[in-house]
Each structure stands twice: as structure tokens, then as C-alpha cells.
Image 1 (cartoon, rainbow, N blue to C red):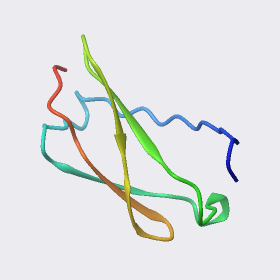
Image 2 (image 1 turned 90 degrees about the vertical axis):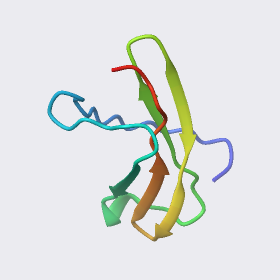
Image 3 (image 1 turned 180 degrees about the vertical axis):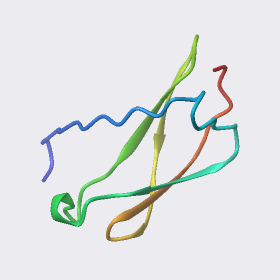
Image 4 (image 1 turned 45 degrees about the horizontal axis):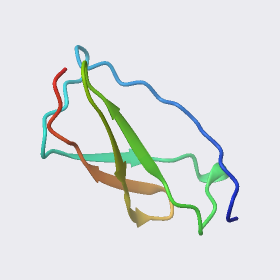
Length: 72
């Protein structure tokens, strides 16, 4: 649905699960909450930078994005 914005936040601690620039991050969504025509973006936060990344929809409930090279 165009114009509708919903946000769900999931925090990932770099100390518990470090992410390195260039790695592929795969996100599994809850099947009940997914609409087919919705675009998903991931926001990566470093200590001094932010990066908004588009995602590739691999399946109905699976997204992938390339992690940017940010400071931790």
C-alpha cells in the first residue's frame, strides 16, 4: 500500500554478532506480517555513520542486504 509507513525495529549488537562490510545479511520475516508489494529497507548504525540499505526479496518471507562498511 503506497504512502503507508510502518516501522519495526530489531537491534543487533555488534559485540554479540559482529557484521563486516560486504557481508550478506539474511533476514527471515514472520509470515503473518508480510504483504507482497511492500518494500523493506535496513538501517545500519555505526558510531559516526548511518546507512539505509535497500533489500532484495529472495522469497515471500526472506530478505537479503549487503552490509555497509561502517565503524562499530
